[in-house]
Amino acid sequence: MPELGKYATEVLLAYAGAIAVLAGLIAVTIAQGRAVRDRLRRMEGDK
Amino acid sequence: MSLWEYANPKKFMATSGAVLPWFAVAAGLATLGGMIWGFFATPPDYKQGATVKIIFIHVPSAMMAINIWAMMLVASLIWVVRRHHVSALAAKAAAPVGLAMTLIALFTGATWGQPMWGTWWEWDPRLTSFLILFLFYLGYMALWAAIDSPDTAADLTAVLCLVGSVFAVLSRYAVNFWNQGLHQGASLSLDKEENVSDVYAYPLWLCMAGFFLLFVVLLLMRTRTEIRLRRIKALEARARMTDA
Amino acid sequence: MIALLVRDLRLAMRAGGGFGLALAFFLIVVVLVPFALGPQPERLQDISTGVLWLGALLACLLSLDRIFALDYEDGSLEALATAPIPLEGVAAVKALAHWLTTGLPLTLAAPVLGLFLHLPAEGYLWLTLSLALGTPALSAIGAFGAALTVGLKRGGLLLSLIVLPLYVPTLIFGAEAARRGAEGFAVQTPLLLLAGLTAATLALLPFAAAAAIRINLR
Image 1 (cartoon, one colour):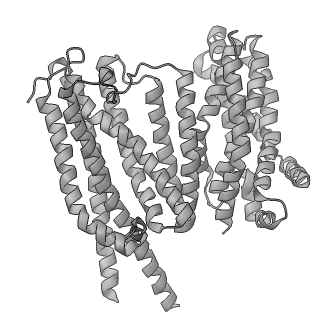
Image 2 (cartoon, each protein chain N blue to C red):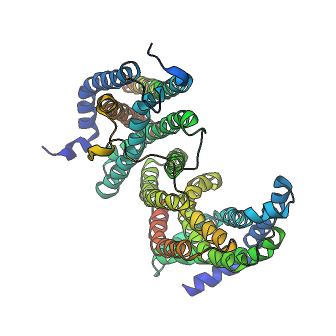
């Protein structure tokens, strides 16, 4: 852990918030992509 | 071999599927590497202390927030002029990423502003412009979500994107006129004098590359999802036709 | 085109809604402000121009969805699209009709409502002038937003979400001109910028609105 001095809260908060937003976006993208891909596969398999 | 071949959804799916893993690895390495380098291996600034480390997220996300809108504008124009569906879907797929980048830029800016300027929020021109950009993204996405017919939605959002771009630029100047700001100028420019020092510049470049690659990866993934969704709709419509 | 304008104005009068409703809304907003912020004259005076501009803007927003919605529903918009006058002209006339029934009454009502907020004496002229210059832009931008959302069942809320960010520059220049006027500063710069903005939106946005209508009618 680096020495963050008196601004530790702010720096950690900024990193945590940004990473949370990015992780959320990535998770949603992957989950949606999977769901849609599986649905399409099932539909094309039916034919 | 021209660039327009990728406007064919099949071709796009094949190529994007092939390059996606490589881009994903590169994006992960650059983003994580840049953030870790920035967070663990840079010294605190003599004035700003450790808060200088926030720059490694703030600047790349702010850059992407603006550039993603520009990319959406170009994609919308290509759709309007050449009617390539992939282009319209790419613009749709980019919007949530742009929204997230704007949110990150605003949030990291607030956490930096709190200790440095003594306030979470200041009605400074740059901050205000980003807030307005955030609203533009919201309106654009809401319009996409509200219209059922995919081609109508693509056309109308393209028109909104064009008009919105003009008004976004106008708002930028209007806001400048309305309130002179606290925000510092460019952190990275070709003019060496006003740049941040190299200790911070290298991890910053890496982070910017990482955020850009991350956007490319997300954009490809989301566009692929949109194309598949469109295919599902087409299949459902065909099934209904044969039933009837 | 003039016939179309007259028809639209007549319809607006007969329906009665647009005309009175926007004014009543404007009045209510202005009346509510002292309840929220307290009756001290100095405080009200400080914010009077801003509140009047914001109130006029929101009142303008209320009647936007009527610009094209009724004509779209009963099919007369399709008739207009095939009529000999260009659709761009139709969009411009519709925006003009909206301004005549909303923007103009709001502009004329603003000085009266200014009394309630202790608007300084120097402010009346500039407030009225800035509203007279700015509200046409609000109508033109609003007509564009209405054209975008005309095909939607519940377009009202979406319309506000789309149009409000587009209103930012107009609001900034208009309110700034009125504020500077009320405080006795030079108003030329914001007023000229506001006039330029209005001229540009009036010239260009009917084209965008017509494009949106064509897409919606397809």
